[in-house]
Image (cartoon, rainbow, N blue to C red; front, side, top):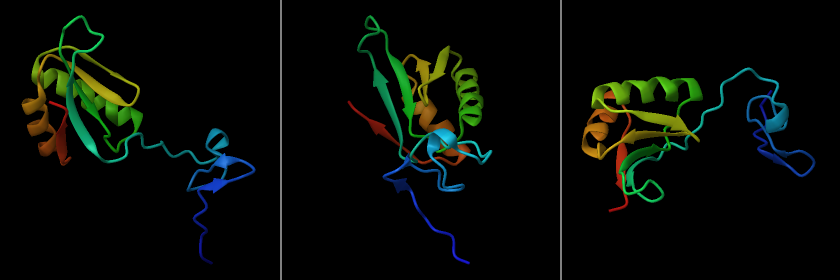
Length: 114
């Protein structure tokens, strides 16, 4: 029997692709993948009092794996940072160094912005 690939229902809204329940009432125990797979590395200074922060977005991994990778990147760069809203923030301009580390982990990435 072929499985249906229903992703949206007018009754329930967005559906989980595995158990076909609404995303809020998902019955499967699978961790949800956060990113879309388009890994972007950017430098943000807006709203940070002029301090630069390197932001990594779009990693196709779960929240737990994102926290582990964030810790590894912070350790390798020797700076602080945070993991929030599905993205990794590393203090300072670490774009080149992070791109090299992500390629070693198997993620292709692009620079975003100036």
